[in-house]
Amino acid sequence: MAWEDEKADVKKAAREVDEKAKETMRKVDGEESISDHVANLGDDIRNEVANAGDEIRRHTDDVKESNPV
Image 1 (cartoon, one colour):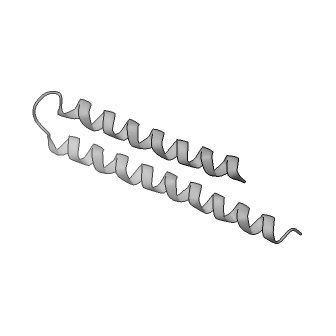
Image 2 (spheres, rainbow, N blue to C red; image 1 turned 90 degrees about the horizontal axis):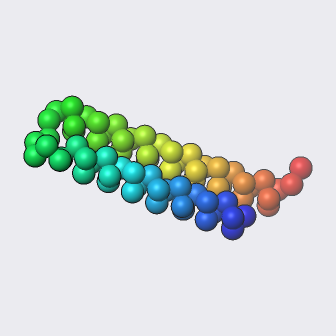
């Protein structure tokens, strides 16, 4: 199980780095337009949903391990 935990943590960190890079690139022109804000919000939502999915998978695996069929 430790491998899955580490994999989920690495994926979360990669998503955060990707999100920060995108936000930085959107600010390069010196202005933040409404579309930049919407894109940043979309990135935030997408990453939170992906992180939640990883957490659900992690806990589902824990339940399966503790209650084998």
